[in-house]
Image (cartoon, rainbow, N blue to C red):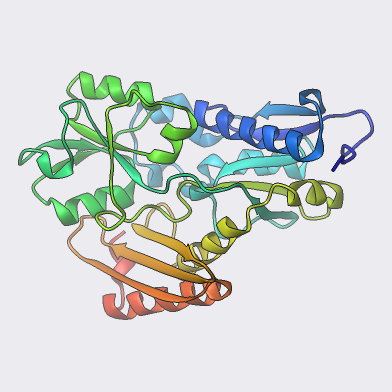
Length: 318
């Protein structure tokens, strides 16, 4: 199907962060749109927008993300550019996205989901269970920190950020003996040489929407909506509807250690979820299965179950 561009002469402007992973995701989006609509690369322009989360001074300081600004860290400036008309669509890692979009914007296009698992990264070989007692592990993720301490309270966890090369250098310099990355990012950047071992979700549930790319647009832009509909993946949408409902019911943010994974089996969906205290001293997990179209209700129900088990004030520890 051939689709007219948003204007007769101007290319479709794709907004993205400038990190290697973000650019890889923008390029994948462009390639899918080119193929779906038989359009040349010149029909698209990738516009790099610096976000608060890309501030090198903040990253270098290894300050906890919750001290800098939570989920809006990686989206605010991009969404402002779209509302101002400077870009036409925005490509996001869905695990960075708040559960509610600003007025005038909508998220209703998802690309096929990549590997959802976390990757355990160490230069010494082996897995998480092979780390010696008292080993130092680096991560900036409250979820991973809490899950790690819940399973290995003997370990020491330090703040740890930066791109893949920066993190590997920190490991080489002895700042930590191990860290975590997302398998999806490593796969999308074809980083097969990174010393990694995937972590089974049975051992560590991933972040909500991990491995998924979402494409945001202006809600009144019907022509862009038609273009995006051609590359939308319905299975990913069903899974994310359940996971993001679970997150929304928990009022989740970067300050709350929350994990979830929805998986499809035909018309049925299995949703697993976990909530933890940041220090790993308490964790509650559960799962629910039902028709895939009931995902949002299932997410809400599972969240309420876990909150009931955890008791009042569970998240007051964050």
